[in-house]
Image 1 (tube, helix red, strand yellow):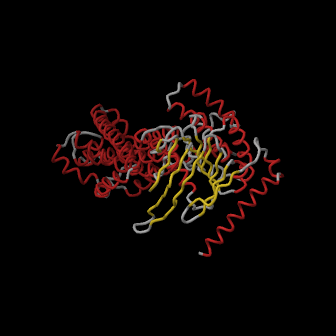
Image 2 (image 1 turned 30 degrees about the vertical axis):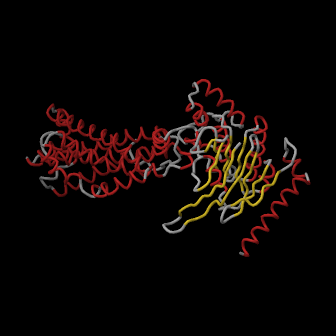
Length: 258
Length: 261
């Protein structure tokens, strides 16, 4: 259980100007839930994720994981970034083994486990490649395997498919769901794509901009396991997508009027 | 076609050297000046220098100082540069100091250093150390600054502490840039080595060169210039080979051969 309790975040952009990125955010995320944070760019959705990761400290309020205040990063919360952030001097295998080795796992065990993970994300045969030799989609698969390798309880995904082309993006969404179905880790998933959020999530947290605040939380009541081709034809799926897009449209008009 | 292309690429630097020697030879014959020996005369003087035990001792002394000065500079400058690149406090403390030292020719500090430390090994090694430090600090600093924040976050999530992140993420990530600095530093080590021996004559390759100049042995002077130049090319080629091996994972690839490796 992750609890975000009246979190505010102010960034100092210049000597005199403050930017209010997050305004009074409260949110509870249950164990095993797939929760998306959806909103336009600049709404502070990534900042919220970084606060849960412990990479950024809130200006006011607090975030807790299992009742304990989050004060910094830890292996119980594994990030996957849009920029991949792989270690370029390590091979695919070296990247995936890095976490388990850091946690003190024996080399042989870490290697066996990492090879299995690399196979699971569909990169068997690429173990000895360096990141520079991989495409964007492959890099993100490595990044996912690298994070899964140290068994975080929560996956923090920061627009992970945002830098990929549409085709690769769809394939990675499908694969992510398949992997997630196996052990149903808690996932916090930041995106600006309505379809992506509805397709993947149990719950969509809609955020609005300046200042970043929660606009509405929508429960996505669609059966699992989800097949993309079936879902696209499902009127309930279409309804969610349209409803959420309408809500955003209303919001932006209201924001413009002010 | 491809074979002949690589052959041309390989042969080009040697052809350039040969061309230079040819121009030298012609210029020298044309000018017919006592203080400007021909290339052939200079090259003929090389074996006698390299065969002389006394001058070999001088070379050994030079190389020892250069190795110690370079080694100490690298060992101290890399961590300093990396810390400056990752901590604003460390950077703002050391930056003004470095800005003052940067434009001063290190040889200009030599008289003062000699006054304090004498004309022996310590003074000369210190000058080499200073000469090498700045480019290595600068490139380590730039390399560390450019390390992606998200890469460090990924490491932090795996449980790496701040000192561990510096050593195990910032250092390897900045390595291509650091080694560029070291390569510049290596050539500067050779230059400061010779200049320090020019100012404080006692032993070393620079000592041979400038004694020969004083005694009007111009073929020896030019032979020494060739030897020192060849040393520079040799060190650089060796270093470049090592560098290419260490950073073969890196994105940057230089197509133009900037060395003889």
